[in-house]
Amino acid sequence: MLELVDLDKRLSKELYEEVFPGLEQELGACQRAARRAGVPVVIVFEGWDAAGKGTIINRLAQVLDPRGFKVHPTSAPTKNERLHPWMWRFWNDLPADGTFAIFDRSWYGRVLTERVHAKRSRAEWQMAYDDIDQFERQLADAGTVIVKFWLHISKKEQRRRFKRLEKSAATAWKVGKREWANHRRYERWTEAVEEMLERTSTPRAPWTVVEATQGRFRRTKVFETVIHAVNEEIERRATASPPKPKPMPVPEKSPTKEQNILDRLDLSLTMDRDEYERQLAKLHKRLFRIEHRLYATRVPVVIAYEGVDAGGKGGNIKRLTRGLDPRGYEVVPTGPPTPVEKARHYLWRFWRDVPKAGHITIFDRTWYGRVLVERVEGFCAEAEWQRAYREINEFERQLADFGTVIVKFWLQIDQQEQLRRFEARQDTTAKQWKITDEDWRNREKWPQYEVAIVDMLNKTSTTYAPWTVLEANCKWYARIKALRTVAEAIENALANR
Image (cartoon, rainbow, N blue to C red; front, side):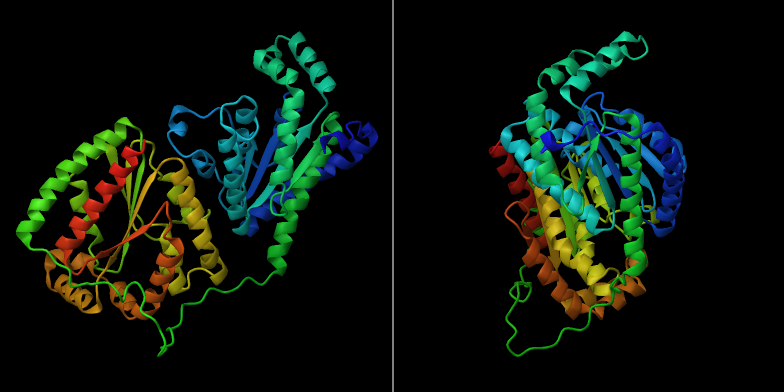
């Protein structure tokens, strides 16, 4: 397709001077309108060496309010970045609502540079297309404007620019052995670029090929494209009537209702204290040895805890961590999102806490809040929690593809046991902080939460991230089952390394 691009496109100086000052004013107004509307904007620049990426980014920066944008130059991943899933660093750089993020090269390096230089196997860079598509779809579904530019010049033009840059002491550093090697591989790069454009130009995140031979034409086309894309989203929001979130109704009773996974649990399972203490000591020694092995082999572990109120998550986590070296794990308690977190995709805060290779992160409540409390209480629209099942599975699959061991626990107790624990907390001064009016109110929505829990378990228990339901009426039984599950999951992963 690139052979069809007309690289001779030009703008006369007279027309440029007539049109471009107006575009600069429009872009400034566009940025202010995006801020008012809370529209996040991601602008991606990819292109040939010497095609003018730095120059055009500099021109955008001269026009935009510096308080509302950030430029992210993307180079080879650092040591710390290599210890995380490859999309982790890009999730970290996502803009808040109403701000711009400009990427000078981006996540497309995996299907361009790393492909051409054979730093990734064919299977790896082919898989990256799925990761990219999911990433951009998730952002676009949440209202992010994604504008992607490929700055295109001919091989002859690139050579001419390299020669010109080499002549000046101020710019000669920009052209080295790597740039000339890429130039000699122009045709090979073209093959990679064309596949990238074909496979990742979508209605929600289209590529714009910019004929970059002339600076005036390049600047004008980029400015026009950004302005149009952002204004289009602002207008869409102004005219659309977004669905209003509403609390989940009480489910209707049906005589033909089949037993669900929660109905089939045997919550009478128990364990006496002597057996509990004996097994706990053995598991602590086992986990301590395992933790040091996973650090040596650089295996990351995510342990996710969800459960009904008073189900025993805190006590379970405490007994798990007693068997671990505190230098190798982190516990992340998840509460209601802060203003900073609410200004970004709901998965952003969880991506930030993904463990690096060889470490363990334990989440006390998780990303499943979107399909549990947010669904039941009406904190998000139905379309949002419905698509969250797919988004969560995609998130966990990317972790698993990186080699992360994922262990997910649901702690279940019956209503009678919950009532007993609530009353015990109220009657015990040292435990009163654990019980709130919200806990009592949530208890009244037990039927709604049960439907949401069963849907969550059925739709997000996968081969790479299965759920383990803990029968938690007996805390001792639930703790031993949890610790044993963690130990076995990590040992199985180590055995396959």
